[in-house]
Amino acid sequence: MQKKSELILAIETSCDETAAAVVADGKEIVSSIVSSQVNLHRKFGGVVPELASRKHLELINPLISEVLNAAKVNLAGLSAIAVTVGPGLVGALLIGLSTAKALAYTNRLPLIGVNHLEGHIFANFLEHGDLKPPFICLIVSGGHTTLIFVKDIGEYGILGETLDDAAGEAFDKIAGFLGLGYPGGPIIDDLAKEGNPKAVIFPRAMLHSKDYDFSLSGLKTAVLNYVTRMKNEGEPINVSDLCAGFQAAVIDVLVQKSIRAAKEKNVGKIVLAGGVAANSSLRDEFRVATEKENLRLYHPSLDLCTDNAAMIGCAGYYRFKAGERLSFDAYPDPNLRLGSKILSKVERRMTNERKIDQRRTSNVE
Ligand code: KG4
Ligand code: ZN
Image 1 (cartoon, rainbow, N blue to C red):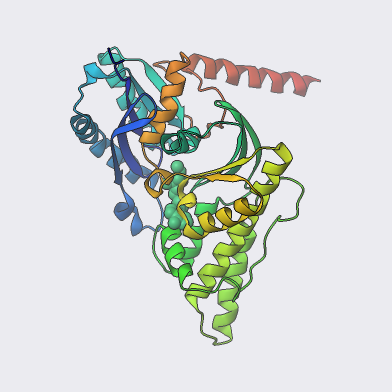
Image 2: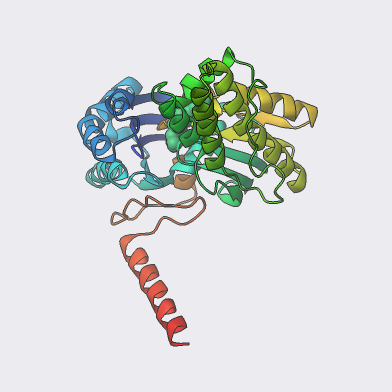
């Protein structure tokens, strides 16, 4: 007899996408719905946390019903519920986590907590059955720019990260400054296709630094200065060239540092994850560079680069099989680090008390 699939209901509400999915055996998307709040936040030029939470609250229950209907499964037919616990906006996370807790508790289902960043990495496993660690993963999203050595599933060494703006944040801020709209990433991506990336050359910050960190706020200032100077001199600005030049400066550093990390760690694979991994030029430049260096490149399809719940279901499945369960008194953790344990209320209180004690002891000394 064929083994019955294990179905996980996954919930993701860490930022401005309300998402739910049903994933079978951690690898097959049975149904997945992402409801973007982009239109709600557009007029503010960025995500308004309080509005995001309210919208999640309005959407989450109907969305879960819809995703279960589409998968032709009811709550009793599930093996577990997986939910994003952090990092993200605390109020937004709270809606998903509270909903997941209520559904898991009332239906006696295991509750699995998932790190949003781990979810982004796992989006790749959904589509690339052959992908196995070790590999270098570059997460580039609205909130993160992080280079990770994925030694094994759940074993993450953070090699470097942005010291200021995240890549997606830089795209969104530049687009906002140029009055191009929100979110800026896809708009700049499109405009840059018509532009010449060598027409305006912007600095590549930290390209030659020995570490794997990134810095993007200087580039933002360089773009602002360029626009101001051109305006003051009465010169016309070619927006496509400007977008292409900005994008190239971001991508150049990301590509070169990722390749260097793969060589140093002696791994043959580079994996891209997060919303900015949807950028066409970033994908092209990585393809060219990895082919040249004889490395394999993996990235999710466009829909799975940006926030979704299927990736949470995939990461949640591995945690479920490893026997991990989230305590019903767990809080959302807006600053959750990749690889760190998701703490229950009691564990978190104990950790905080320990920190206070340590501080007190070092003050006395
Ligand atoms: O991963 P994601 O959906 O949400 C976070 O976890 O942050 O990433 C959203 C970010 C936004 O900053 C958006 O502008 C950027 O990803 N983005 C892009 C593209 N599509 C989305 N950036 C560059 N090019 C794109 N095509
Ligand atoms: Zn994300």
